[in-house]
Length: 296
Image (cartoon, rainbow, N blue to C red):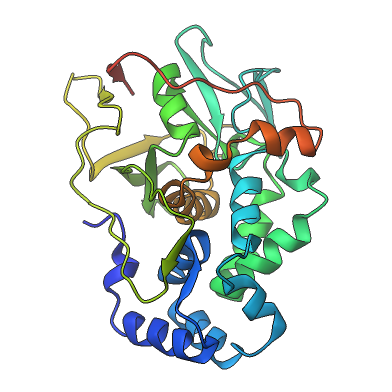
């Protein structure tokens, strides 16, 4: 199990090196550097072919903010909103209720306000540079149901705060054909890189064996077993029509973007409040938990 299988994919270093040579420069923004290393291999090869275009040059220029702004959109727009009312979520076939808010809460996979962004097309067009048309189409189609149960996962409140801030990520693994279960692996994320630019050809590092959050926060399952990176979670429902599980496409989108956002330090370096103020989004920040031990 790996938190970043893309980094060791055969042919990736060669494709990145070719892109670097085609661009004519080595240094790029931290955000674009990480996006390249997590991108689909065929897209990297296409970027190298188009490296002389104004669009690709703008994305990879050392001072570029193109990928950064996409990540800020992804991490903002209500992700840190504590005011999750109403607690009844609509599905295509009815409604489902969120659990007792005093103990748990329903946390969105995709920020509820993303589709209201005036820069939504820019968001998807940028993702299309790095990931295949089939993936981007599936992700975008999935975001059209962000008001349904399929866009929500229930966590303990403090666990949800770690999730909101990208301090752990969930990698979707498998789902049943009848929609009654799905599995995902949980990985803690390290502290972000504290720099604004990186050499494009330098390989990122994302440890797969972390046992806690960077602030030493820990979480446990119902049997008091400590949850470390690689822990497999199984989500189930007895009624996939009225109470569907989380969307695998939305989970995959979050898995991809949250790792890049976390490692680049978008949350820490640029925050959400400024972004939200600029776009007139009223969202209260979800504080990180002070407790070190929490249950999922």
